[in-house]
Amino acid sequence: MTARPKLGATAWGYAWLRTVEPTAGRPDPRLPRARAIAHRQESALAVDASTITATIADGRREHSVRLRVPPWTDAEAATAEALLASEREHLTTGDIPDHVHRRLTAAGLTVAVPPDEIEAICTCRTREAPCMHVLATLYGLVLSVDERPLTAWELRMPHAASGRRRDPDWLALSELEPGTFFTGPA
Ligand SMILES: [Zn+2]
Image (tube, rainbow, N blue to C red):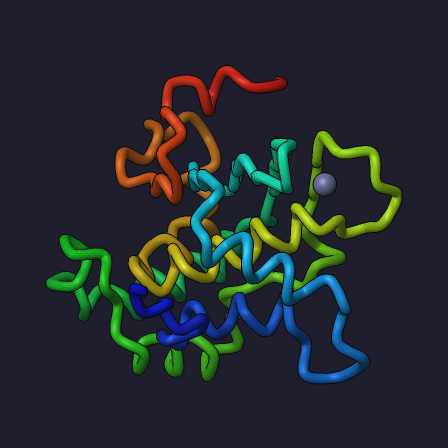
């Protein structure tokens, strides 16, 4: 049995983990199942500019999830760019150290977005919002952000939202073909 990656191992992933698992309130009973789906890697997840797209296998069914995250304002983005300017060497690997996250937070910027500010679409017909597949997608995002913290950064950059090339680093969490992944429901 291979070791499961720890969720929220980086400050960047942890920020997103708090979005799906708020410290206050009763824990959502669906979280363990959503977490298991993300951990079993029965999903494919892609991050492109401010949009997260995922195919979530739930039993025998598959659901397509699309999340849209609001970008930083231009002023926030400028602050973020200035903070990252001293960390250029990390940009090639995508691994931004946790201390940059602390500086970002100290400057009043947030990396993760509360659930009610995330636009979410899922092909399931559940009326619950967020549905379990959206929760699983958020867990998948935590895992991919832990692996490549720059993803959390790119997700919030305003310029990235318009006409930027598709991120070639998008993460396949399963054996699903990337080609078929994007031909799912529009
Ligand atoms: Zn759903």
